[in-house]
Length: 136
Image (cartoon, rainbow, N blue to C red; front, side, top):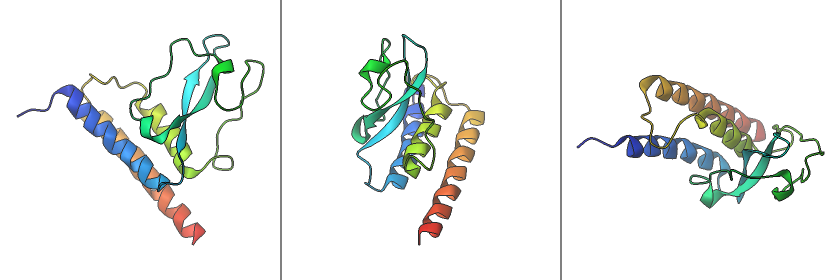
């Protein structure tokens, strides 16, 4: 029995998100996700509950004033998340979201995309292991 494109893609993305959750190790209850303000067109991060992150979709009419973290106005500057300001799993989640942004739930994940995602996950696995070694 063949998997439908939806199941194939969902399973593939679930594996990728499971890698994020493994780096989280239950520490964070929410992870940042990218969202664009429809008023000022700036990209912001907003916090999404870990349990909702796989299914989360940004609102089509979201504005900075609706953000659950700073900045909450269009005139405020946004500090780019980094390892200095966010936990490792948060940066991993943002990078993963950026990597999969172009995939649609119903699109077939081709071999080239899978290869790129595997390389991305391997890169983060190495970074995560290095960080664990530095902390011990």
